[in-house]
Image 1: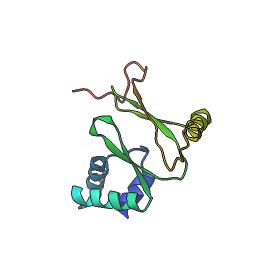
Image 2: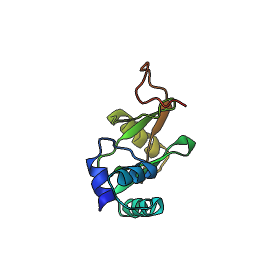
Image 3: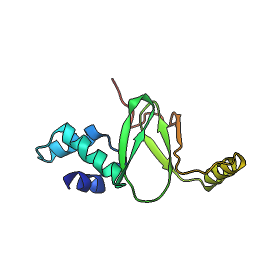
Length: 125
């Protein structure tokens, strides 16, 4: 239940299992990383969270709030931006119909670099 509470209360919408694990440890919880992975996988199976597999092996989880959105991912700083575009959704439907295809699910990840100089999210080695 603490994992769910953490996901609901955090300011960040996309968390890795390691992020959840570190936050739980910081709050005084005695939990193992394997337990966090197991709980997140159970939540994913139950439809409570959505797992996103981004390029470079990054997997993050977000609460499934029932609203579809797509993602822009900065390959320089790692920031994830969410957006909704009815035009993109409609075009996908048109393409599927034109190919006699029924869409059951989809996701759109766009990779690039944010234009913000001195980005506060940039990771420095």
